[in-house]
Length: 406
Image (tube, rainbow, N blue to C red; front, side, top):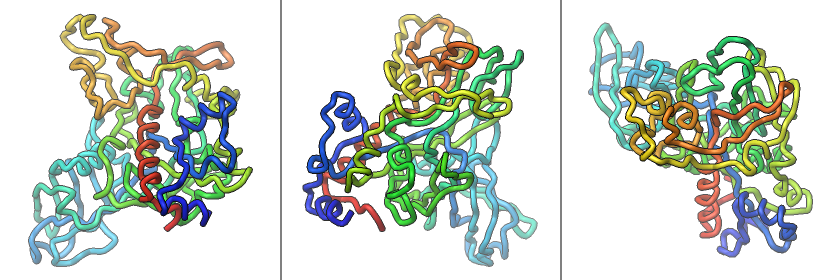
């Protein structure tokens, strides 16, 4: 790995994004060890195990002795562990799945802060209420911690019951019954852990991008196992990018969108083989959403090969409904009726199925369950954005501006 780092430092590293490298593999033109040093891999999707630790300047020094509670844009935080008595500061933890209401939660709050928007802080202390607006620039400490994320692969879900089912594995609408639709997550062949399943590189101290900010792997995350490993990561929110993160509405409330990217060093034949894995070889467990127990297995090629990464829009087909179904059910609030806000859209596909005028179109693919082919109607991960993040990381590595380890 030292040799790879030396080539990165000199600006001479041979770097590919995962998408570029996989196409060479498919074409039978895979570079040898003398032709590749780094493959950048990434994933963006719903990652419930996201939280942030803040030190909030809530009031003037001496205004209160100890905070009892805090909300940011209505999203509740947990006060502590340091009381910061009489300093007017509040240490708090906000979970990515904490929620103000059904439409706004921790993920939305995190994105708003990173985007530079002011958020409204309300602190209850000493029987009084203290309120002020604050921006991320004014918050001296804002550290995001991914307690578990970037799973090696995820499970594809469908609903085998006769009635709708409310679940986090959907968009704002509940998942319809009768095995009529499927929900998928995961980046497949470009996911960092899929390219390092044994965590040979992605161990404590490895550098990664967390929402576009340089971060460090802390170790494996909660619920990690040898079969389905995941990571715990930390990074400074002041360095993050709003378009690499956000909130996502589900029928069970808001969830958190988080992204992870890693520059995978290719140092020997084994690591070269690992970064050569293709969607066709990546398992996709299939399960009924009611018990989440995988009973069959597909491949990620059913999700990402021969399907559309992006959503096509033809506003000329708009029927100008009094209430736009696509707008009402867009999980990220991208206002599809106005042409889709590309800075928010993660190409989930909900607008395709909820617009009665067929303004939006995309082949989202289908998955073969035990009952037959089930169409994918919602993708909780974005391959298109993940590939852009891989390009971002490739540029950093190529410029010599990247350390493989802390």
